Amino acid sequence: MSVTYPIKNKNALTHFKNYYAAIKPNPRNYTMIIMGLNTAFRIGDLLKLQWKDVYDESAGHLRTHICIEEQKTGKLRMVPINPAESKALTHYHAICRQKLPEDYLFPSLRDKKTPISRYQAYRIVKEAATESGLAEHISCHSLRKTFGYHAWKQGTPPAMLMDLYNHSSYKVTKRYLGIEQDERDDVYMHIEL
Image 1 (tube, rainbow, N blue to C red):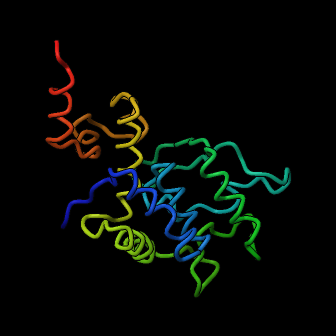
Image 2 (image 1 turned 180 degrees about the vertical axis):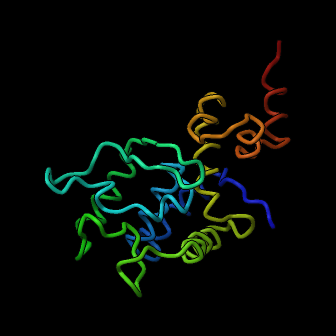
């Protein structure tokens, strides 16, 4: 089993995010990647999302939060829909032909009543990664890890990330962040006491 890494390089991340928006336009795939990067949901939880989870049909607008019960932990998780997600979801909603509240957000092309498979999600992520020069160690779990890495780099305390991820130990969260020697060296080089 190979190790999955976060996407650390911001230029590569931008190219990766925009692959299904500009290079090979596919609103479903683009929205899946944007949602994965910004919610830090596990891929199984992400693929189970239905339109009713993100869109309030009676009010005619996106919800402010997504509330799910995580498959792995059984814990309830409430995540706000941020501007990047809102933009992707609004565009995706506008172009979707059939979108009943119970329809999956990321439907299979063969059977609209089922979500894409985890393997199909992997192929979608892997294609964008390869085309962005990120050929090795990128998978669906990289979306979740990338969220944490960039949140950490922006100053989010590791204890908060541990809580957001619903991890039972800081050791697991630290491994998720992919902290490597260059980040350790950077701390020592900039301390200058």
